Length: 84
Image 1 (tube, rainbow, N blue to C red):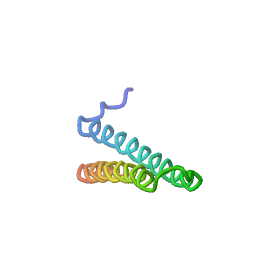
Image 2: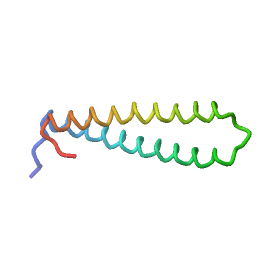
Image 3: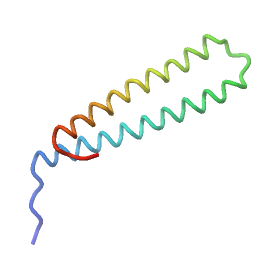
Image 4: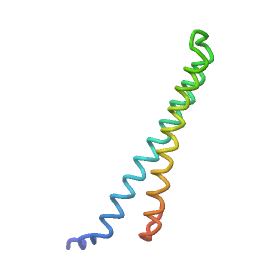
């Protein structure tokens, strides 16, 4: 006997959950990259202070945007009655 076909709401919830997992992984990777670059920049004396700040600020912006995406997806999952 075949299991019943998942409802469209279950399919949508699964798709949103997958997007949330991908965004969470991307956020983790960006934070790791930023930490590595910040560590490496300590040894690059030739880089201008403003350039270092610009590079790190771009990572902060990526982190902010990705965190916003993760939060929106978490809220959507919660609104649909799913769990993280």
